[in-house]
Image (cartoon, rainbow, N blue to C red):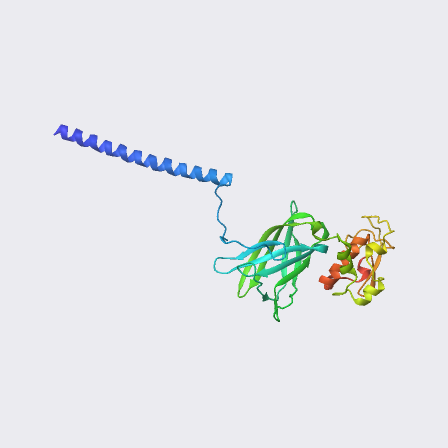
Length: 289
C-alpha cells in the first residue's frame, strides 16, 4: 500500500514538473517573440502597415508634384500637391489610379502648414479653381499661396477635411516647399510670357502701361537694396515686405505698386493672375506707425 502511494506521488510530481517546463517554454517563447518583434520594429525591418495600402504601381504625378493617397480600401483617391512660381500651392484631385482626374464639389479647404521647429501651424485657405472641362459646381483643383516665411522649408501639411462624393477624408503629408519652384524666372521667355500677357487681374492695359516689356529689362540699371526694416510710412514690397524702391514700380489692375527688386514684380503678377482676390490696394503696402 505504501509503495503504491509513493509511486503515485512520484508520477504526480513528474507530471507537475513536465507541466511547469511546458509553461516555462511558452513564457520564454512569448518573450522571445516580443523581443524579436521589437528589434525588427526599431531597426525598420518591420513597420506597421498604414490604413490605406497601395500595392499597385502608379505613373509619375501628372504635374510633377507629390502624389498622396487619400481615403481607405473601399473609397480610394489621390491628390497631387505642387508648389509653383510665387509660392502658389496647388492641390489636384485624382481617382484611384492617380492618372484620371476626378471632380469634387466646390469647397474651400483650410490647410495647415507647419515648418520644422514651429510652435504651431500656419493656416492657408485653398480655394476651388476649376480647370478647363470641370463641370459646373465641380472642381479638380484647389489653389492657395504660401507665406514667404514657409518657402524653402520642409513642411508638415494637413487638410482636415476634403470631400470626395459623399465621403470626407483627411489629407496629410510632408512637402518640401522649395523656393526654386519658380519664385524667380530662369529664362527670358518665361518672363516674357508672364509679364507681356494678360490674365486674372493683370490686364492688356497693364501690359501696355508697363511698356510691353519685362521687369528685368525695364529696371536693368537699378541696383536693388533689400532693407528689411522699413520705417513708419515707407512703401513696402507686396512680396517680401521689405522697403520698396521708388524706382521699381509696376502697374497691376490699373494701379501702381512698388517693389524691392525686379524679380518680385513677376511674383506679384503671378499672384494677380492666379489668385486675384488676394491682391490688395496699393495703400495696404505701407509700413504702419
